[in-house]
Image (cartoon, rainbow, N blue to C red; front, side):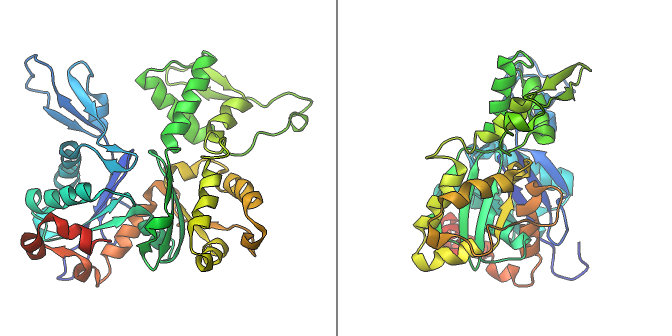
Length: 378
């Protein structure tokens, strides 16, 4: 935190897989909390050592027979506000140990977030947490800011899906936004089905975690190498040690096929959606967004070979007039974890001296009600 009279803002990046929370001006969030809540629903008497509600990692460990587990964000959209409120409460009061009544709050949102969800979010921030000021911003805009840009094309690929978003001076061009459900969850599920069919894993919650670990450490988006490049037709194999100490062998299909799910369809593959995105734009805008660097963010974009595969699939589909002059170029913030890009951009924005002027104040909220979020945050 700074030592000036202006209080720091609280920055919250709401993701399908995790919620990143911290203080404006910092280089990384103070905490990353799995976006999951478990509530006691059993008719049995709850013991003195148990809680009615568990959040994050504790929620993932809560016994399913006694607790109902809820993931309050689906494909980037908040679908269960009460559970999301529990996560914010845990993050602000317990992790940050801050009083939200003293600090402005900046939250990221999905680029196509419904107005009703935005209004309910504003209502919780002002009426439940008592924040003095509030602002919402699409996560892709924050990712672009983390790359030091305010205009450009953003590929945001997270757990719940992937979105391609053109941004012009900090404003999203909603008419040209394209979204797909292909994200980290789809890749994990594809890998798990493959390993289950080969009897290497089952489909228990533990196996889902193992498959996610394998995906993050060993899987690749790169196209599978031809057999002649694999040493006389022999496919390379790699081993992975399970938590119980057993070792499973992974062949080339196990490593490459899961990531391939995002590019398999000629109609809904990520490469086709990006081309459709460009073709939706006004003619004069297309050249600008193709020839400038394309910003990337989200945990799924960390999959090995993601940018190279995207480039290899897109360029042959572009009409001659749209071929980039210097090749298709991708950029991302200089951080090891692309899951943090949107939070970092939000931290940069909320630390600017002009941020308070942009926010919805508590007085404005009391005068206009929750609907003000749809006119002031755009």
